[in-house]
Length: 170
Image (cartoon, rainbow, N blue to C red; front, side):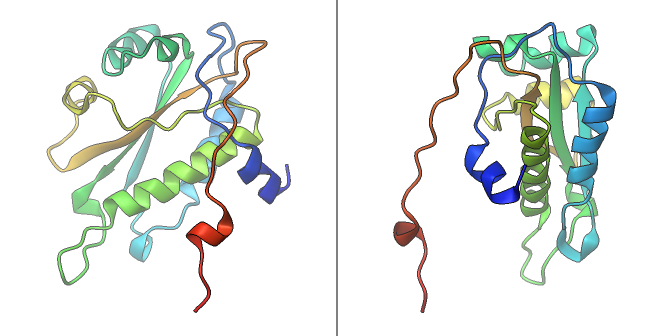
């Protein structure tokens, strides 16, 4: 898909066909797009965790209990390590910025592949930390279901401010 069309057309999906997991080769293309994201001083402080086993899906889905999330055949977790990211002289740590850029690459790549996503930040962080066995310095930044929309599903239309409301030329 042409890039600007992709950006305009990508929508959050909240209804997944549980019988259609994303094939490994498609997952690898999506993950590779995240891997190619820029990061401060090229630190690449991320980890992309694809949850697909029934056992781990059950545990992860307890950490975000929205009913529509439960049918996702796979879940992508974007995590990072504060000790691996760049820190500016005033103490600013680039981890969350780096992970946001990677997450954006991932969800756009998924949309390009016809795979549905929905960027989620309202998960139970302590639950995911325990489930994944994260180190103290690691953080789960965002999660997204991965899967194909259920047949007949219509995503909500995007509502965006006009360009003149958010951009200025000075």
